[in-house]
Length: 224
Image 1: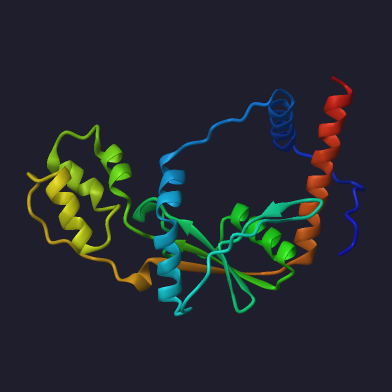
Image 2 (image 1 turned 180 degrees about the vertical axis):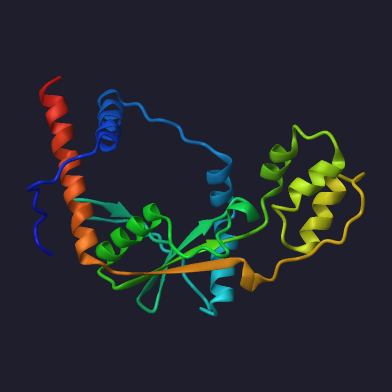
């Protein structure tokens, strides 16, 4: 791949703000703690999501990747590799955030996959959104400010997709709700795949942007 060229390339104000924040954190040994229900669900349901992907896509047995790769511009750790294709799981928080009818991949996930393809020297990847049951502890927090059991039930419906788990949660969290007919969602509808083909021009732009960020970080330190 050609060395990134910097002619006519500039950083946006948003990118500069990000670099300033990063430099400040590294100077003083501070890190912003980012905790959210979305991240928590992704971490807690990682294995379930990967198993759902392999089952729906009929991939058979897989081995979770434990290797992190890096080059001069980027670093990354894929979920797993199967027959030369990178698979990456994105856990949807609820049915409302699951892109069942989505036509295009979120740009940040597209860029992330391009980075993976470059680091692993491969040509194709698949970003797979998965819709798995929300863990009990997260669901309980999601319902904690709702007093009426019927309202709790309606909210929980967006987070539970298998009947067995539904019965368990209903008995524990909203036992007095009006009985309803629960509709399970088939596995095949709980995985949405976006295929990503390697784009060397796009990868080069990523590398250019990272180089510009590094140069701006050095400029901040020199002028401090």
